[in-house]
Amino acid sequence: MFNRFILILFIAVISFTGCASKKSLIILSDNGKRHNTIIITTSKGSTEVNKVGGVVTLTSKNDIPKVNKIISKEEIRAKFNNLYSAIPKKPIVYIVSFKTGSLELTDKSKKIFNKALKSIENRSPCIVDIIGHTDTTGSSNMNMKLSLNRANLIKSIIRKKRLNIVSLVAKGYGDKVLLVKTKKNVSEERNRNVEIFIK
Image 1 (cartoon, rainbow, N blue to C red):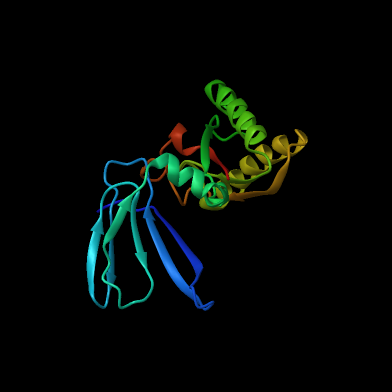
Image 2 (image 1 turned 60 degrees about the vertical axis):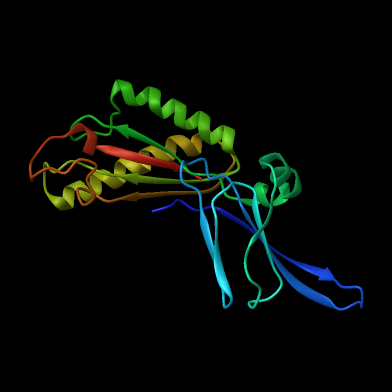
């Protein structure tokens, strides 16, 4: 399956008679992946755009779609910089692990958490979602509480930093969503974690 990222603009074009008509401008933008293609179909046919910068212009659903020209990545960026600026950034995800049955981060995770704090600071203002998890040791009820306590601990530390955060939410999923699938009563450090999503 192809990964698709399309830059689509709908603009009004003033004709010589003074009447406004709608025109659809479709440009294939770079998605940073190997495969990058779109298929445009109207009642009169279809065309495949598989080159970055490929431009298709349509004035109605009865137009025959075809690539009119190819423009460079630099031209796309320069022409539609405002649109690119409005595209949400891809979330950054950090996973920190905890010692068994506790609210204490592992030594390795303390360093990871410091990186997460730096990313929050650099991306501010941002949204931060914190999701706590446990391994499968202990009861499901206790694990649900522990996962939420872990998430709330991370939330409280972030809040004390007084960073520019639009939304800061903590949730606990207990042992319901495991990073590493295990049977019941299996101690697995990678499942004793908190995920920090920075958007």
